[in-house]
Length: 316
Image (cartoon, rainbow, N blue to C red; front, side, top):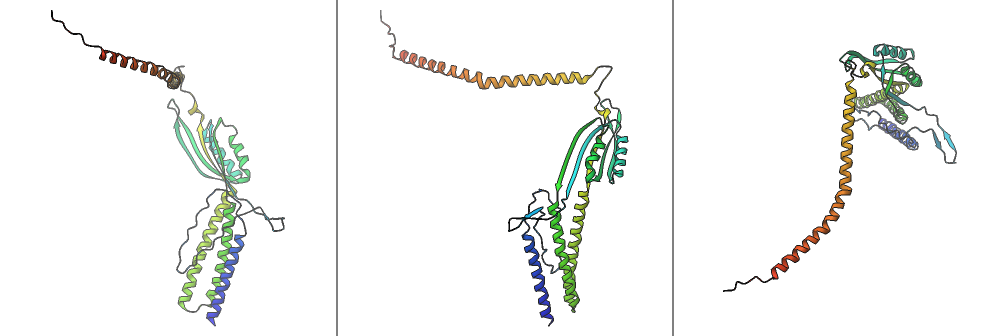
């Protein structure tokens, strides 16, 4: 009787897994974000079944068989990051102001570093690097406040990663693993021998580990998409001032020398191109006919000279 009940439970579990796989196969993958999701690390357990994966991705609307459109609401998860390099009068003051702004906007400071740099005159000046996170919906506002009163924005790179498909796939896997764990818990209650209990226990531990891994990845996507990262480099304005010694600015002389060198090589390269593509072909086309005529005349001269009889000496 126990064997029949056990076989019936396994058959029901296999049918449920097939139904989930068929349901996932019907959801077409429509996102091409090009972003690689964090890879799962599967811990092998004794007699643990192969993990059931879902290849379906999120989709905003799906066309039904009647030609209509069935709307499905999917909240997109986009991870937005910004890298900036700005020139300011006082890096330390600006770093403190940006840190305070991030906290007031509901974000936080990930890291900050204040270090010493030098101008061209070897005068020490402070520089700073800073990484903050702010709510994604306030990213544009944060960038406007950061760029306010700065001397120059040297670099501003903004990137986004759409991880909606990966998140939906993880959510589907989580549901599948939780269903499998619930089935194993029911089977566990029916086992009596130590071997059977240990086998089911190992499988339950496997699925619990996979559930925790998936929840961690989902939490990462949720937090990374809700809080955008801004990486900043704060450059002191003094480091960009030109070098000046007693009213004399050597950078002007160096600039003129470099410019003259560029002009020389530009003229030399122009001359070589003109010589190779125009002058040299002209010289070759003129020289070849003259050289052939010279060879012909020399050959005729030698033949005539060879046929001419040598003078004889008469005896007197």
